[in-house]
Length: 75
Image 1 (cartoon, rainbow, N blue to C red):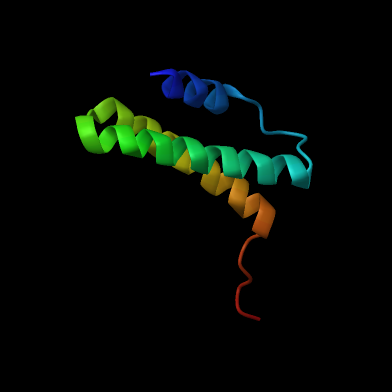
Image 2 (spheres, rainbow, N blue to C red):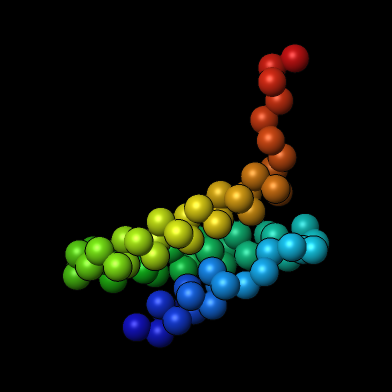
């Protein structure tokens, strides 16, 4: 379960004052962790793994919004 340790470290990492390159790297790392945890979850169906994936997904979404910008209001 070394992947869970990596996920916890990623969750605790500060995301302020990041360059665009750092955000891209963080987004890719989050995706890698989510997919790795998902493979384990498919076999074990452990709820703790699902909770970890949800937290990582939330953090990844925040990073992606910052990268891509918020959608316009349609004007």
